[in-house]
Amino acid sequence: MGKPVLERRELGSTGLKLSCVGFGCAPLGNVFGDVSPDEALASVRRALDLGINFFDTSPYYGATLSEKVLGDCFHKLGVSRNNIVVSTKCGRYADGFDFSAERVTRSIDESLARLRLDFVDILQCHDIEFGSLDQIVNETIPALQKLKAAGKIRFIGITGLPLDIFTYVLDRVPPGSVDVILSYCHYGINDSTLMDLIPYLKSVGVGAISASPLAMGLLTDSGPPDWHPASNELMYACRVASLHCKAKGKNISKLSLQYSLRNKDISTVLVGMNSVAQSNSAVTVNAKLASSLTIAEQSCWCFREFTSGITSILKKVKTIFPWCLNVV
Image (cartoon, rainbow, N blue to C red):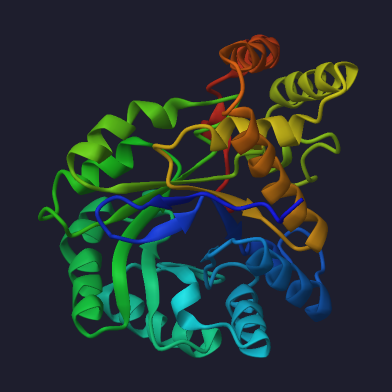
């Protein structure tokens, strides 16, 4: 059997084609536990071997460690710049938020040095709901446009949790000023409200990236980390859903990722990876999905029937995600 081939999907009007599974680099900043340099290198190498071409990081992850580790990995592996799509962020840092034109302009130079790159493909304003949205519109985005003209970035994005922040900004900036949005915890078995925004995004030519398909650890057999801000009710419901999957011989994490990957209106689904096993698992799930789409419609019905059992368990708490603290 040949190695799995990851589907490439276009990102809005950018012309970029992203692997449908993206490498979320927060774990490289030791956000979820210590990752050794060797482990980081092995995970990036394996991801590239499996066809993952999109890497998303931020100076906030591990207080700039994620960017530095990723840059070191690319350098050691001798990765061709033409074979990767790299996204980083600005505005959120270890010491707080600063979306001023001066800070984001300085930020990209710092990020490029850590990443060992001459430019990034996408620069995203990180968790904009914690700043002034009017500042994002009137100061930050224009500053990023200047960085684009200078060749330091190719495209501009915005990220955050509440979905209405995206329409607020996109309605107020000149058309084409923002190329992509990154939403998290809003497209998965437990919460699919991102789909309400997709028609609007299509109408303005903006691409969509989805992150945290496992709801920051909620939709896993091991459960969320201690710092997770979910209510006890939601944690319990997700635990019951996990046990439901186990009883059927399934894994809730793989099903959750498979659910997210089925929707081709989402250009890429970001999955945090810090090991070869995680890279393999993410791509294997996609490969199985690609195969399943070629079989009888009844099998698709079976998938919906099974996942409906999970969603019914989560129904009472399906849209409780405003409690999230921003980690993505």
